[in-house]
Image (cartoon, rainbow over all chains, first blue to last red):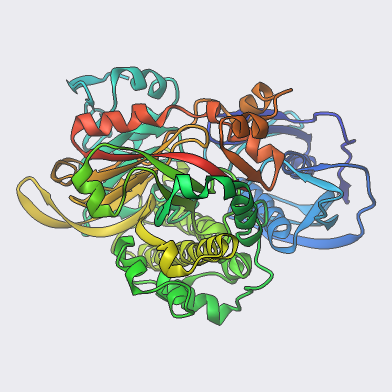
Length: 149
Length: 465
């Protein structure tokens, strides 16, 4: 079953872990797919402010693997960061078709970065393993991750 | 944590538990309060637990919380039983500083500064995803950059041999192997040679406003009232990808070789292992990318000055004072316990400070930066290393909040500092008050004898990401 991102712009749906030199986030999700989607949304929410809502028209398929849940999570966010940096695509809609602890497949929709439409906020350069935590309590997953700025 | 005072500027974190050596921290009592407020001392202790560490896990006065290794940390490892760790180098491989001197004096160009900074801002791409429309390199060309470093740019007539003589390792770390660098790194770096990027990276026009050692300043070609330019940047997405790729490999390697990690970001492999050799070859390539990057930016600075001031290269006299890495791992010969031996020195947010070598310490964009010189004592005590900068006082978020309702660009302009930033967010995050006073950091390394202050540089114009 496909899980789609559902966050509505303007509401803060993640916590910021504030630190002198860098920044992190704490997100939760009902199920692993929701956790991954919320983390993706939070990362882009930190990086880019949309000046006005626009329709995203470019679709990117995403397939990522990892040796365990933590690596998969880091590799998922790294993949999205690569798409942003290399293809200059600002992503704002995500979905996951399949996910387990070592594999995720899904996609994202976005549009080319445009000064008239987007305001760059925080520049994330890498996803770290430092203090990385993914936990599950009942059906709720939570994760914290620190970004290299 | 339990710290023992050795001198007013040097403190010992005694070996205990799984630590193989002591931690040694260079700091004043005052800076120590900041250092103790985060986890950086624990990180000094964690690094001391790694196999093959030689002498001590060292920390400079600008030490702060990093990933695995603290920023401002120095650690040397034995090539036979030691390890290499990408976390001991950092994501931005060969992030570093280059200082250019000119034949210009402040008095003669101060009325042209605004136009000059605008010209620099046009000529040197800055900011998020900054890229060169005029310099897109394919994989073969980028492999050449990774192999040759700054010389790659000089061969394109962007600089000369004299520039190369004033760069750490002559602008090229030996042993780079472009074959071990991922396609993704080549993709990310394809249009980033000659770009500053964002965050705390900058190009800054400065005036030499104080000379502390006339003879050494003379030797570096510096004089009071002179215009200089500092460039602070690294290996951009190319280096970040090399680091990210290596962490995945090193996490597996640490498990494979049974290395116990207090923090996964300390992941590492024995220096003699294939994983380590591969990382060192890729890291050297990324370091060389950074040297080439600063060389191409130097060319952009020369062009911008020439174009705006209508002066010839000879009249401008823009020369490289020095170019230092502050995120690197290198094999070096050091005297340990009276015996000369080859070790792999990791400097993460720390600068090489060999005797007589210029050391470049940037501050914030509202106050000053410093030129220091390395000393024999640094060679004896810190594997020839010293501090690298001011360190943040406030998080980026806090800085943003503190800037609410303030116009930082105007405030700096009122102080006589012209700032051009690709993004408003970066300028406010990098506001001067978000940083510690770099003077308090260089004061410690001078009193500790591991560097000597030579000159102070005052900013007059800055371009930022």
